[in-house]
Image 1 (cartoon, rainbow, N blue to C red):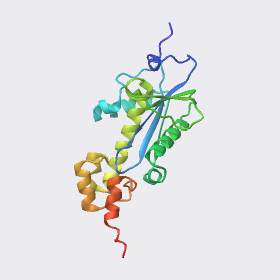
Image 2: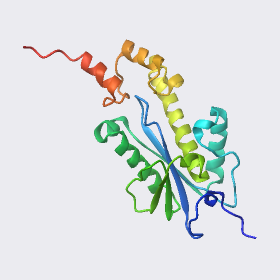
Image 3: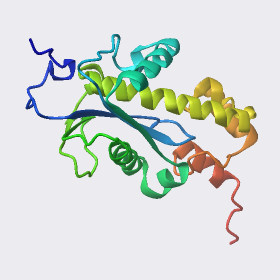
Image 4: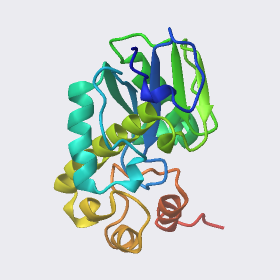
Length: 210
């Protein structure tokens, strides 16, 4: 008896489709890159516990990320830098990171299932699924890889810029982060197009003379 692919349990796609799930992490933070991941799960090597990364503990995410990298048919993680975010805007930078993740797979998918309501421009047929990270296991897996990769990157930024406490807030606009940002100013890894950062930059710009 053929084993059912858990990715297809909620959606009726053709049996011959090679499905990759795609998700992002880091649209809201004031600093650091935005990450995206694409995952093609192997139906013969199921991974227990996959779900939206935000609903998992850090320890569980880290453990599942190792399982995904070991058992998935193919996986890829990509990013867009702070400079690209400021140049393109966060939506377009996120779409670009997703496209890079899909193009980084060593197995060519025939269908990309994207978490959310928009799809990146890619040669692969794609479909957006709202809240897909808790409905489709391949998207859940991508969510976990994107989140753990970004958290690791922010841990490295903390080593480089310890006074911003990136290890605690991961770049999100928490009270602690905003306090450190006001105290120490804007770092090279802050997104200068984001309002709180842009406001600080404006505050230190000399007023135009009358």
